[in-house]
Length: 450
Picture 1 (tube, rainbow, N blue to C red):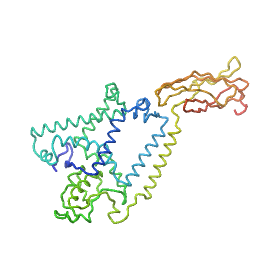
Picture 2: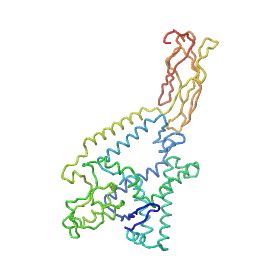
Picture 3: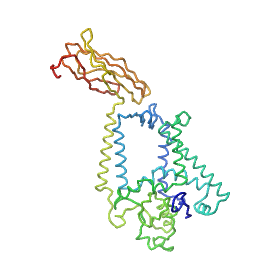
Picture 4: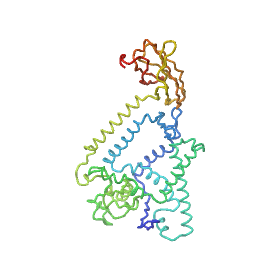
């Protein structure tokens, strides 16, 4: 591997030139890559009930997801989501190791789907790239680098637009109607991706991503990892293929995007992409022998039985089940609008000339109903006999908020307590909210339930 000096830093970096590979696990990864691309590039364009399928509307503090609208009053769902992601990390890492890194991490997905094919198209295969980079500057080398970096910049801009679409909306952003701040974020995302593609690459996984450090604490002897069958493979030799041993072809090394040798044992740099498994399989199949690099565990390598279900995975799985059940219950019970009632500022009660005591409130309603049509709301009160209620009709468009006066009057003879609790009931065609509050009267202290 050629040595490239890091600008402004001591030491050196061995640049990684992974060779392309095809195989069963590579095919599986293509499907997972397709799912991520669909989520990033297609989902923001889909509308459900007139709203984006996915939109994180930070300026208005709203989240659109699958036709539902979530606001700060739904913070419990954010808490459940964060807990679910945390325990998912614990659960799947304890069983499968760094399967996220190898099959679904955006860093891996975009490098494998876009960058490496573009690099091979502009500069050739691994051998040609290494040989050319080891030589001095030439016209052939310069134009290929320029074309490659221009292609990387185009991919970075595309990814920057796609990521910002999740926050600004796909249609406004791609048609030039989004805010200046949105396009500023496009520039920031694009710059970060460009630097990553041109320089960081596997260095991000090794030095910046904390997942590799978490892995050692989340895995154990029964975690499924990629390992080398030392018993069968060693000692290595060019003629050991028919016996099932390693022929020292180095193919598992040259295909590794992290630049490691899996035969040296478990390493934190390994992202479990299984490229080395496909590489070894392609070689050992010529000798009708099973692959030496495969998914296994320390327990299996030592001849013990691996247990996917063990105390830690059962605890993690139980927590995931409980969190999922709680989220389902809360979603089913969720009211698709918000309402609050507060006493009008500076107003306690008023005694009218007709013998009634009047209290004035401010009722605030926000329509979060996932519908393209306006929604009508009925307002009533419970707990105040003989009360008169004055409220204007409420008809709200989607995402509209209104604050309106609510006047409640009670005959003086019925107001025999200084404070009378009651409930304001706000109902839509699909749900209702009960808002507890109090009615203040002119009754003297010492009455019932002062």
